[in-house]
Length: 394
Image (cartoon, rainbow, N blue to C red):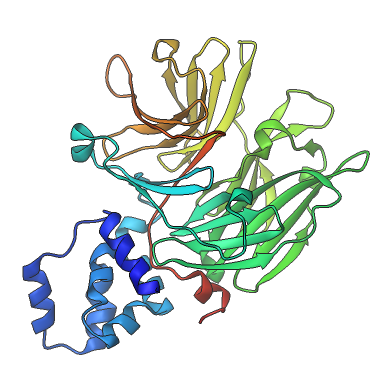
Protein backbone atom coordinates (compact mmCIF):
# COMPACT_ATOMS: atom_id res chain seq x y z
CA UNK A 1 0.00 0.00 0.00
CA UNK A 2 2.80 2.41 0.91
CA UNK A 3 4.68 1.66 -2.31
CA UNK A 4 1.53 2.38 -4.32
CA UNK A 5 1.30 5.74 -2.57
CA UNK A 6 4.93 6.52 -3.40
CA UNK A 7 4.35 5.65 -7.04
CA UNK A 8 1.28 7.88 -7.16
CA UNK A 9 3.18 10.79 -5.65
CA UNK A 10 6.02 10.14 -8.05
CA UNK A 11 3.71 10.38 -11.04
CA UNK A 12 2.17 13.63 -9.84
CA UNK A 13 4.76 15.74 -8.05
CA UNK A 14 7.23 17.22 -10.50
CA UNK A 15 9.66 18.22 -7.77
CA UNK A 16 12.83 17.83 -9.85
CA UNK A 17 13.86 16.59 -13.27
CA UNK A 18 13.92 12.76 -13.44
CA UNK A 19 17.02 10.74 -14.13
CA UNK A 20 17.36 9.98 -17.86
CA UNK A 21 17.74 6.54 -19.41
CA UNK A 22 21.46 6.95 -20.07
CA UNK A 23 22.20 7.84 -16.45
CA UNK A 24 20.08 4.94 -15.20
CA UNK A 25 21.99 2.42 -17.31
CA UNK A 26 25.23 3.93 -16.07
CA UNK A 27 24.20 3.41 -12.44
CA UNK A 28 23.35 -0.23 -13.16
CA UNK A 29 26.76 -0.84 -14.73
CA UNK A 30 28.82 0.78 -11.99
CA UNK A 31 31.17 -1.79 -10.55
CA UNK A 32 31.19 -0.13 -7.14
CA UNK A 33 30.21 -1.32 -3.66
CA UNK A 34 26.54 -0.75 -2.86
CA UNK A 35 27.37 1.32 0.24
CA UNK A 36 29.62 3.62 -1.76
CA UNK A 37 26.89 4.23 -4.34
CA UNK A 38 24.14 4.86 -1.80
CA UNK A 39 26.19 7.05 0.56
CA UNK A 40 28.22 9.20 -1.81
CA UNK A 41 26.57 9.12 -5.24
CA UNK A 42 22.80 8.79 -5.21
CA UNK A 43 22.46 10.99 -2.13
CA UNK A 44 22.96 13.82 -4.63
CA UNK A 45 20.02 12.75 -6.82
CA UNK A 46 16.64 14.56 -6.75
CA UNK A 47 13.75 12.96 -4.86
CA UNK A 48 11.82 11.97 -7.99
CA UNK A 49 14.77 9.94 -9.26
CA UNK A 50 15.24 8.24 -5.89
CA UNK A 51 11.62 7.13 -5.79
CA UNK A 52 12.17 5.56 -9.21
CA UNK A 53 15.36 3.83 -8.01
CA UNK A 54 13.41 2.01 -5.31
CA UNK A 55 12.18 -0.44 -7.92
CA UNK A 56 15.70 -1.61 -8.87
CA UNK A 57 15.85 -4.33 -6.20
CA UNK A 58 14.79 -5.21 -2.67
CA UNK A 59 18.16 -4.04 -1.41
CA UNK A 60 17.76 -0.65 -3.06
CA UNK A 61 14.22 -0.35 -1.76
CA UNK A 62 15.36 -1.11 1.78
CA UNK A 63 18.28 1.32 1.59
CA UNK A 64 16.33 4.21 0.08
CA UNK A 65 13.49 3.72 2.56
CA UNK A 66 15.77 3.82 5.59
CA UNK A 67 15.70 6.84 7.95
CA UNK A 68 19.49 7.12 7.72
CA UNK A 69 19.38 7.59 3.97
CA UNK A 70 16.60 10.17 4.23
CA UNK A 71 18.62 12.30 6.63
CA UNK A 72 21.84 11.87 4.64
CA UNK A 73 20.15 12.90 1.40
CA UNK A 74 18.70 16.00 3.04
CA UNK A 75 22.02 17.07 4.57
CA UNK A 76 24.02 16.57 1.38
CA UNK A 77 21.75 18.39 -1.01
CA UNK A 78 22.58 22.12 -1.39
CA UNK A 79 18.99 22.67 -2.58
CA UNK A 80 17.77 22.29 1.01
CA UNK A 81 20.34 24.32 2.91
CA UNK A 82 19.31 27.35 4.97
CA UNK A 83 21.57 29.60 2.91
CA UNK A 84 19.32 28.98 -0.11
CA UNK A 85 16.16 31.03 0.60
CA UNK A 86 14.66 30.67 -2.90
CA UNK A 87 11.03 29.49 -2.86
CA UNK A 88 10.41 26.49 -5.12
CA UNK A 89 7.36 24.87 -3.51
CA UNK A 90 4.35 25.88 -1.43
CA UNK A 91 2.23 23.72 0.85
CA UNK A 92 -1.39 24.90 0.71
CA UNK A 93 -4.26 23.83 2.94
CA UNK A 94 -7.72 24.54 1.63
CA UNK A 95 -10.36 23.25 4.00
CA UNK A 96 -9.80 19.50 4.27
CA UNK A 97 -7.57 19.35 1.19
CA UNK A 98 -3.80 19.70 0.92
CA UNK A 99 -1.83 20.73 -2.16
CA UNK A 100 1.78 21.18 -3.19
CA UNK A 101 2.42 23.92 -5.70
CA UNK A 102 5.73 23.79 -7.57
CA UNK A 103 6.68 27.05 -9.24
CA UNK A 104 8.46 26.88 -12.57
CA UNK A 105 8.91 30.05 -14.58
CA UNK A 106 8.82 28.13 -17.89
CA UNK A 107 5.57 26.34 -17.03
CA UNK A 108 4.13 29.55 -15.63
CA UNK A 109 4.33 31.26 -19.02
CA UNK A 110 2.10 28.63 -20.61
CA UNK A 111 -0.14 27.46 -17.79
CA UNK A 112 0.20 28.96 -14.30
CA UNK A 113 -1.66 26.17 -12.45
CA UNK A 114 0.31 23.33 -14.05
CA UNK A 115 2.35 22.78 -10.87
CA UNK A 116 -0.59 22.36 -8.46
CA UNK A 117 -1.06 18.78 -7.18
CA UNK A 118 -3.42 17.45 -4.56
CA UNK A 119 -2.13 15.15 -1.80
CA UNK A 120 -3.87 12.05 -0.52
CA UNK A 121 -4.48 12.42 3.22
CA UNK A 122 -5.55 9.76 5.70
CA UNK A 123 -4.85 10.12 9.40
CA UNK A 124 -6.94 7.10 10.42
CA UNK A 125 -9.62 8.08 12.93
CA UNK A 126 -8.88 11.83 13.03
CA UNK A 127 -11.51 14.05 11.33
CA UNK A 128 -10.04 16.17 8.55
CA UNK A 129 -12.18 19.18 9.37
CA UNK A 130 -10.45 19.60 12.74
CA UNK A 131 -6.83 19.61 11.50
CA UNK A 132 -4.68 22.67 10.74
CA UNK A 133 -1.13 22.96 9.41
CA UNK A 134 0.90 24.92 11.96
CA UNK A 135 4.43 24.57 10.59
CA UNK A 136 6.71 23.28 7.84
CA UNK A 137 10.40 22.42 8.23
CA UNK A 138 12.82 20.14 6.32
CA UNK A 139 10.01 18.36 4.49
CA UNK A 140 8.05 17.65 7.69
CA UNK A 141 4.68 19.24 8.36
CA UNK A 142 3.35 19.82 11.86
CA UNK A 143 -0.43 19.71 12.18
CA UNK A 144 -2.71 20.28 15.13
CA UNK A 145 -5.97 18.40 15.60
CA UNK A 146 -8.45 20.23 17.84
CA UNK A 147 -9.29 16.88 19.47
CA UNK A 148 -5.94 17.23 21.28
CA UNK A 149 -3.36 15.69 18.96
CA UNK A 150 -0.15 16.82 17.31
CA UNK A 151 0.71 15.21 13.95
CA UNK A 152 4.15 15.18 12.29
CA UNK A 153 3.75 14.24 8.61
CA UNK A 154 6.01 13.83 5.58
CA UNK A 155 3.61 13.81 2.60
CA UNK A 156 6.31 12.75 0.11
CA UNK A 157 6.93 9.37 1.77
CA UNK A 158 3.45 9.30 3.36
CA UNK A 159 4.68 8.74 6.92
CA UNK A 160 3.18 10.36 9.99
CA UNK A 161 3.13 10.04 13.76
CA UNK A 162 0.76 11.58 16.30
CA UNK A 163 1.05 12.60 19.95
CA UNK A 164 -1.33 13.82 22.62
CA UNK A 165 -1.21 17.49 23.69
CA UNK A 166 -1.62 19.02 27.16
CA UNK A 167 -5.15 20.18 27.89
CA UNK A 168 -6.29 23.64 26.75
CA UNK A 169 -9.32 23.60 29.04
CA UNK A 170 -8.36 26.71 31.02
CA UNK A 171 -7.08 28.74 28.05
CA UNK A 172 -8.93 31.15 25.77
CA UNK A 173 -6.38 31.83 23.00
CA UNK A 174 -3.54 29.78 21.58
CA UNK A 175 -0.95 29.81 18.80
CA UNK A 176 1.63 27.30 17.58
CA UNK A 177 5.02 27.02 15.92
CA UNK A 178 7.31 24.27 14.61
CA UNK A 179 11.01 24.08 13.78
CA UNK A 180 14.32 22.22 13.86
CA UNK A 181 17.29 22.43 16.25
CA UNK A 182 20.44 21.30 14.44
CA UNK A 183 22.75 21.01 17.47
CA UNK A 184 20.61 18.24 18.99
CA UNK A 185 19.03 16.96 15.74
CA UNK A 186 15.54 17.48 17.12
CA UNK A 187 12.24 18.95 15.93
CA UNK A 188 10.22 21.02 18.38
CA UNK A 189 6.63 22.22 18.46
CA UNK A 190 5.79 25.27 20.57
CA UNK A 191 2.37 26.18 21.92
CA UNK A 192 1.62 29.57 23.45
CA UNK A 193 -1.76 29.83 25.15
CA UNK A 194 -3.41 32.54 27.22
CA UNK A 195 -5.00 31.57 30.51
CA UNK A 196 -8.55 32.58 31.43
CA UNK A 197 -7.46 34.12 34.73
CA UNK A 198 -7.59 37.83 35.57
CA UNK A 199 -4.99 38.99 34.93
CA UNK A 200 -4.32 36.46 32.23
CA UNK A 201 -0.87 35.07 31.49
CA UNK A 202 0.76 33.40 28.51
CA UNK A 203 1.68 29.75 29.07
CA UNK A 204 4.40 28.23 26.88
CA UNK A 205 4.74 24.49 26.27
CA UNK A 206 7.45 22.89 24.12
CA UNK A 207 7.25 19.40 22.58
CA UNK A 208 10.44 17.52 21.67
CA UNK A 209 9.90 15.04 18.86
CA UNK A 210 13.10 13.16 19.71
CA UNK A 211 12.21 12.77 23.40
CA UNK A 212 8.46 12.49 22.72
CA UNK A 213 7.59 14.69 25.69
CA UNK A 214 6.15 18.09 26.59
CA UNK A 215 7.55 20.58 29.06
CA UNK A 216 6.51 24.05 30.21
CA UNK A 217 8.90 26.95 29.64
CA UNK A 218 8.94 30.10 31.80
CA UNK A 219 10.24 33.47 30.56
CA UNK A 220 9.53 36.82 32.21
CA UNK A 221 9.75 38.63 28.85
CA UNK A 222 6.26 37.44 27.90
CA UNK A 223 4.57 38.52 31.15
CA UNK A 224 3.51 41.92 29.76
CA UNK A 225 1.87 40.55 26.61
CA UNK A 226 -1.47 39.05 25.56
CA UNK A 227 -2.54 37.05 22.52
CA UNK A 228 -5.14 38.29 20.07
CA UNK A 229 -5.59 39.14 16.40
CA UNK A 230 -2.33 38.81 14.49
CA UNK A 231 -0.63 36.94 17.35
CA UNK A 232 -2.97 33.96 16.87
CA UNK A 233 -1.34 33.13 13.53
CA UNK A 234 1.17 30.26 13.55
CA UNK A 235 4.71 31.24 14.48
CA UNK A 236 6.97 32.17 11.58
CA UNK A 237 10.12 30.03 11.39
CA UNK A 238 13.38 31.60 10.22
CA UNK A 239 16.56 29.60 10.78
CA UNK A 240 15.95 28.14 14.26
CA UNK A 241 13.76 30.88 15.74
CA UNK A 242 9.98 31.27 15.77
CA UNK A 243 8.39 34.72 15.61
CA UNK A 244 4.99 36.08 16.63
CA UNK A 245 3.30 39.48 16.75
CA UNK A 246 2.08 40.05 20.32
CA UNK A 247 0.08 42.81 22.02
CA UNK A 248 1.09 44.73 25.12
CA UNK A 249 -1.24 44.41 28.08
CA UNK A 250 -3.41 47.46 28.48
CA UNK A 251 -2.69 48.71 24.95
CA UNK A 252 -5.29 47.98 22.29
CA UNK A 253 -2.96 48.45 19.32
CA UNK A 254 0.55 48.46 20.78
CA UNK A 255 2.45 45.56 19.25
CA UNK A 256 5.87 43.94 19.48
CA UNK A 257 7.51 41.02 17.71
CA UNK A 258 8.75 38.21 19.95
CA UNK A 259 11.31 35.65 18.81
CA UNK A 260 11.59 32.23 20.50
CA UNK A 261 15.00 30.58 20.10
CA UNK A 262 14.27 26.85 19.77
CA UNK A 263 17.75 25.83 20.90
CA UNK A 264 17.97 27.95 24.07
CA UNK A 265 14.15 27.96 24.56
CA UNK A 266 13.98 31.64 25.45
CA UNK A 267 12.27 34.78 24.10
CA UNK A 268 13.70 38.04 22.82
CA UNK A 269 12.04 41.21 21.55
CA UNK A 270 12.83 42.05 17.92
CA UNK A 271 13.95 45.64 17.43
CA UNK A 272 13.39 47.99 14.46
CA UNK A 273 10.66 45.98 12.74
CA UNK A 274 7.46 47.44 14.21
CA UNK A 275 7.17 50.98 12.84
CA UNK A 276 4.54 53.64 13.50
CA UNK A 277 1.86 54.03 10.83
CA UNK A 278 0.38 57.28 9.66
CA UNK A 279 -2.79 55.63 8.33
CA UNK A 280 -5.82 54.69 10.36
CA UNK A 281 -6.95 51.13 9.92
CA UNK A 282 -4.16 48.71 9.09
CA UNK A 283 -3.40 45.01 9.24
CA UNK A 284 0.03 43.60 10.03
CA UNK A 285 1.38 40.11 9.53
CA UNK A 286 4.82 38.48 9.58
CA UNK A 287 6.36 36.81 6.57
CA UNK A 288 9.69 35.43 5.38
CA UNK A 289 11.11 37.29 2.39
CA UNK A 290 14.38 36.05 0.97
CA UNK A 291 15.24 34.35 4.26
CA UNK A 292 14.68 37.59 6.22
CA UNK A 293 12.17 38.24 8.97
CA UNK A 294 9.67 40.65 7.43
CA UNK A 295 6.48 42.47 8.39
CA UNK A 296 3.74 43.41 5.94
CA UNK A 297 1.32 46.28 6.47
CA UNK A 298 -1.96 46.72 4.65
CA UNK A 299 -3.63 50.11 5.10
CA UNK A 300 -7.32 50.92 4.82
CA UNK A 301 -6.48 52.68 1.55
CA UNK A 302 -5.25 49.43 -0.01
CA UNK A 303 -1.52 50.14 0.12
CA UNK A 304 0.74 47.18 0.97
CA UNK A 305 4.30 47.58 2.25
CA UNK A 306 6.84 44.96 3.31
CA UNK A 307 9.67 45.72 5.76
CA UNK A 308 12.56 43.23 5.57
CA UNK A 309 14.94 43.04 8.53
CA UNK A 310 18.44 42.19 7.32
CA UNK A 311 21.06 40.49 9.50
CA UNK A 312 22.91 43.79 9.72
CA UNK A 313 19.85 45.37 11.36
CA UNK A 314 19.07 47.40 8.25
CA UNK A 315 15.44 47.45 7.14
CA UNK A 316 14.60 47.33 3.42
CA UNK A 317 11.16 48.17 2.04
CA UNK A 318 8.94 47.01 -0.80
CA UNK A 319 5.87 49.08 -1.58
CA UNK A 320 2.89 47.66 -3.47
CA UNK A 321 0.32 50.39 -4.00
CA UNK A 322 -3.45 50.49 -4.27
CA UNK A 323 -3.59 50.35 -8.07
CA UNK A 324 -2.85 46.59 -7.82
CA UNK A 325 -6.00 46.12 -5.71
CA UNK A 326 -4.26 44.05 -3.01
CA UNK A 327 -6.02 45.65 -0.05
CA UNK A 328 -7.22 42.23 1.16
CA UNK A 329 -3.71 40.73 1.16
CA UNK A 330 -3.23 38.63 4.31
CA UNK A 331 -0.14 36.49 3.67
CA UNK A 332 3.12 36.61 1.70
CA UNK A 333 6.06 34.30 0.94
CA UNK A 334 9.12 35.17 -1.16
CA UNK A 335 11.25 35.13 -3.25
CA UNK A 336 11.30 32.88 -6.32
CA UNK A 337 14.43 32.51 -8.44
CA UNK A 338 13.21 35.32 -10.72
CA UNK A 339 12.58 37.70 -7.79
CA UNK A 340 8.80 37.39 -7.40
CA UNK A 341 6.84 36.64 -4.25
CA UNK A 342 3.56 34.90 -3.49
CA UNK A 343 0.61 36.61 -1.81
CA UNK A 344 -2.77 35.46 -0.58
CA UNK A 345 -5.53 37.88 -1.56
CA UNK A 346 -8.82 37.62 0.26
CA UNK A 347 -9.78 34.26 1.65
CA UNK A 348 -8.96 31.90 -1.21
CA UNK A 349 -6.91 33.52 -3.99
CA UNK A 350 -3.20 32.88 -4.54
CA UNK A 351 -1.20 35.24 -6.70
CA UNK A 352 2.30 36.36 -7.63
CA UNK A 353 3.78 39.86 -7.33
CA UNK A 354 6.68 41.03 -9.47
CA UNK A 355 8.27 43.95 -7.58
CA UNK A 356 11.11 44.37 -10.09
CA UNK A 357 9.17 45.66 -13.07
CA UNK A 358 7.82 49.18 -13.48
CA UNK A 359 5.02 49.46 -12.66
CA UNK A 360 4.92 46.54 -10.22
CA UNK A 361 2.71 43.71 -11.41
CA UNK A 362 0.28 41.28 -9.76
CA UNK A 363 -0.71 38.03 -11.51
CA UNK A 364 -3.53 35.85 -10.06
CA UNK A 365 -2.57 32.16 -10.07
CA UNK A 366 -5.74 30.37 -9.01
CA UNK A 367 -8.71 30.64 -6.69
CA UNK A 368 -9.61 27.69 -4.49
CA UNK A 369 -13.17 26.47 -4.23
CA UNK A 370 -15.02 26.16 -0.94
CA UNK A 371 -15.28 28.39 2.11
CA UNK A 372 -12.92 29.79 4.73
CA UNK A 373 -9.30 30.88 4.41
CA UNK A 374 -6.58 28.95 2.65
CA UNK A 375 -3.19 28.69 4.35
CA UNK A 376 0.12 28.65 2.49
CA UNK A 377 3.64 27.91 3.70
CA UNK A 378 6.99 27.51 2.02
CA UNK A 379 7.69 23.79 1.62
CA UNK A 380 10.91 21.87 0.96
CA UNK A 381 10.33 18.20 -0.06
CA UNK A 382 12.55 15.61 1.61
CA UNK A 383 12.80 11.94 2.56
CA UNK A 384 13.19 12.69 6.29
CA UNK A 385 11.14 10.20 8.32
CA UNK A 386 9.13 11.57 11.27
CA UNK A 387 9.05 8.12 12.89
CA UNK A 388 12.85 7.90 12.72
CA UNK A 389 13.33 11.25 14.45
CA UNK A 390 10.91 10.28 17.20
CA UNK A 391 12.27 6.75 17.60
CA UNK A 392 8.94 5.24 16.51
CA UNK A 393 10.36 3.26 13.61
CA UNK A 394 8.16 0.56 12.17
